[in-house]
Amino acid sequence: MTIETESRKPMIEAIGLSKFYGPFAAAREVTFSVGEGELVAFLGPNGAGKSTTMKMLTGYIAPSEGLARIAGHNMMEDRIEGSRHLGYLPENGPLYPEMTPSGMLSFFADARGMSSAQKKDRIDAVVDICDLSSVIYKPISKLSKGFKQRVGMSQALLHEPDVLIMDEPTAGLDPNQVRGVRKTMRRLSETKTILLSTHILQEVEAMASRVVMINEGRLVYDGDVAGLRQHGEAENGENGLDDAFYALTREA
Image (cartoon, rainbow, N blue to C red):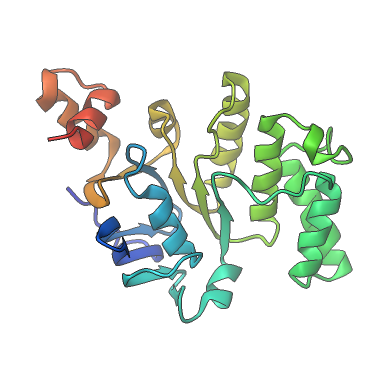
């Protein structure tokens, strides 16, 4: 099942993306797009190829076949321009433990060539969005995992991108920390296009307008949550997302 997004400007495009490591295919002919203003959940079991696909979309690794575009920019041929539109939070975010959030954000702002005025404005903005004011001058190594995730998110937002790709932003967090990240994601979805990888199916219902699912490197579902539930009903008469997830990703 696929959802058409022609009515929205495509901001994230995977076109026949494949990644081979010798005879092993981490991803094979993955094709989908995310339109402007969508928050799409990217699902799949461990080892399904989610992180590999996200890395290809961001230009972090080159695809063996296919094309990745961010805001219309080919991420292999025009990665710098595409990256200006993109905020990327990998599963283990790029943090410097010896720095404070303030120092790290200042470092990234300088690396991006921001003016002094722009730097101050953007740091203030992301500290507010990610609720970091209480820890802004504490060493990152001393922060809880929840705050470390927020620091990682803040650097992804620093240059005010219109596209966000986030890989398991709530992995390993306690329920209160998950609640905080979820609140932040809802706030961001008002102005950003977001592709969010998660294993927490409750987050799909709470935040996503659409689901893209892969299994064993291949796309197995692209549609809304209601349509996904139908796969669970076909499995055992229940309409839970966990039943649908099992039905689409179980081993043959």
